[in-house]
Image (cartoon, rainbow, N blue to C red; front, side):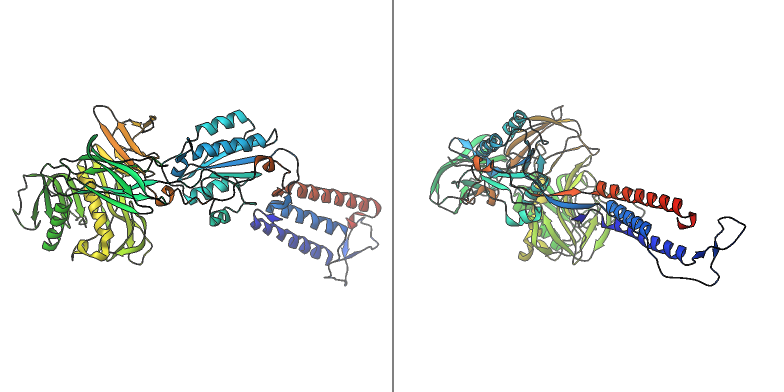
Length: 623
C-alpha cells in the first residue's frame, strides 16, 4: 500500500481536535437536581474530572475522521493482477541508424516489424496495442487501440533515422510504456541494465533482437584542404573482422575529382589523401562499397574559395594581431590580411571594404566589412551614440570552456583567461558554452548569426598571451577556427550533423525539401530565422522565393551505432506461442479512496442511529 500525497495526512490533526472536544465536554459532569425549570443542566458544585471517558460515538467519529484523512491522502493498494480480461501491449521500436542496416534483402527494421506482427497475431482478440518509438527522443506512435488494421498501417509507416539512439530516449520510451501489461522491445541490441533500472518497470521488457552482427565501413571525417594549396584527407574506419574492399570517390559540386579502389584492414582506420583541389565548393566523399549501412558512406564539407579575399585584423596588442593573422592564413592562404592598431590614427584605409574584419577588444565604428568577428568585445561606453551590436553585461576574470558544438560536453573544462558575458540577440546561436572558473553559471563563449548588418561572430574570451597557440588549450583554438570558417563559408550552403538543430536566416516562409523527397513548410521567427532538425543524412534544400535558396548538407557518423558487430548475439524473446501463454500477473496500483469515503459515511450513519436511540431512551443530556 502507499499514499499519493502524504502531506494530506495533516488532516489527521482532526483526531486531536476530537479528543480535545471530548475532554472539554466531559470535564464538568452534570447531575439531576430538583428544579422548576425542566431539562436544566447545572454543573456539579465540586465534582470535576479530566479523565477521558470514551464511548461508542467517539470511536465512530474517530473512525470516520481517520477514513476521510486516508482518502484525502490518496491511500492505494498494490494488488496482483489476476488472469483474464483484455490486456494492453506496448511495442517499443528503436529507430536509430543501425536499424536501417540491410541484410538478406531487408533492413533490421523490417525484421522488427515482422516480429511485432507475430506478437500481435499471437495475442488474444480484444487486446489493445500501442506503439512507442525512440531515437534522439521518445515519441508515441499511436494511442492504445484494439484495431489491428490500424496498428499494421502504423508499423508500415515506421522508418529508421540517421541518428544514434539515445539511452535517455530509450528510458523515456520505457517509462511511457510502463502502464501496459506487457512491453516488447524491438532493437538491434538489448537495453542497458542501468536504463531498465531507471525506468522502474514492474518486469523487464521482452527483447526481440533485429538483425545479426554485420560488416560495415564508415567515413569518419573529411578535410577538403585548401584549394591549390594543401591536400585534403578522408578517414575511413572498418568495423569488420576481415579486410574489406571499397572504392572512394571525391566530388566537388557534383564533379568527380578523385577515384581510388582501396582495401581497409579489419578494425582499422585508413587516411586517404587527395588533391589539392582546383577550386572551392561543396566537397562530397562517398564510399562505393557493398556494406550493411549506407548512412555513413557519404560525408560533406565546404572547401574555401580560391578567390582572393581581404581581411582586417584590429587589436591594441601586437601579439594578438600576429596570432590572428597567422590563423587566418592557415585557414585560407588566399586572404590578404591587413593588421592595425585601432588606437593609431590612419593605421589603415577606412574607406576600404573588407570581406572579414576581426576586431579584438575594440569597436567596429567606421569599418566596412561583409562579416565581422568580435573577440573579447569592449563593453558599451556611456555617452555612445550607437547601441552596441553585442551587449556586454559583465566580465569574468577567468573562464572555462565546458561545451563545444561537435564535441559535446568536454571531459575536462579548458581554463581560459578573462571573458565577457554577452547577452546574445535572438538571431545569433551559441556554438560553445562556458562559465566562470569554479562557478556553475553558463554563458556563450562563441556564437554566430546573420543580421541586417551582415554576418556577425563573437569570441567572448580574451586571446592575449598567445592563448590560441597553447597546446593545452586546443579546444579554444578549434572553437575559434570553427567560428571563422562559419563566417567565411558560402551564404547558400551549410554543413551540419544529423540531429543538430539547424538555424538558417531566410526572412520569409520557407519550403524544406528533404533527401527522401519529403516537403514541408517552415515559418520564420521574429528574427527571420527558420529552424529544423535533419534526421536523415543528405542534402536539404530551403527555398524562400525570389531566388533565395540555401542547401544544408547533413553528415552522419557515430562510432557506437555504426559498429554493427556491437550487437552481440543474445537470446531472443520466446516464440509467439510461448508469449501468448498463460498471463503472468503483475502488481497494479488500486486507489481505495471511494471505499474509505463510504466507510466514513457508514460510521456517521451508525453514530446518528446510536444518538437517536439514546435520546429516545434517556434524555437530551446523554446525546
